[in-house]
Image (tube, rainbow, N blue to C red; front, top):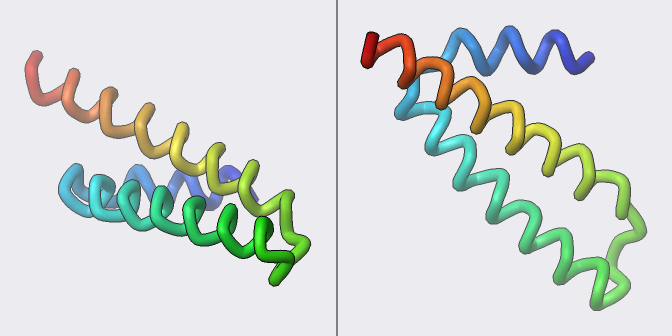
Length: 69
């Protein structure tokens, strides 16, 4: 499943990746608030979202490096 996400992220442009990054960060904040208010028990979703953020950051830096060369 992670490979599918990587392929999806690699197909996106840098601008789209940055938008996705901000959306995921907002989702983490919402999830933390929901967990604190005991609305959800999906703690594992936060770690999955953090991994997606790291994947996106890695892909963005690789694409920016390619553009600079």
